[in-house]
Length: 122
Image (cartoon, rainbow, N blue to C red; front, side):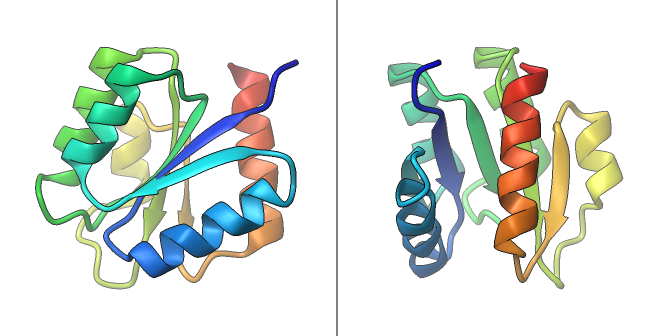
C-alpha cells in the first residue's frame, strides 16, 4: 500500500504544522492548510486519503465544507476535530458524512488509531 495522505484543515496553523511533523515521522504524507477553501483546492488537485477538519474554520460553515469535500471526493474519509467552542457536534458531522470525530486537545495515539481505521474502512 502507498503512503497514506492526510490533509489537515485547521485555522490554527501552529497546531496543523505540529500535526504534520508528527504524522510525517510516523510514515504518513501530511499537509496543513488554514481554510476550507484551501482544503477544497488541495482535494481538487491531488489525491487525499483522510482529512482532519477542524469544525471552527473561519471562511465557511464547517458542515458546508464537509458537504463540499464529500461532493468532490465521496470516498474521502473525514475526521472532524472539535474544540471547546464549536457549535457543531460530532454526531451532526457523522450524519453529514464524516467518518468520525475527536475532541481537542488531541490524543495522538487515538488520532493515529482513527486515521488507520478510516484508511482501512476506505
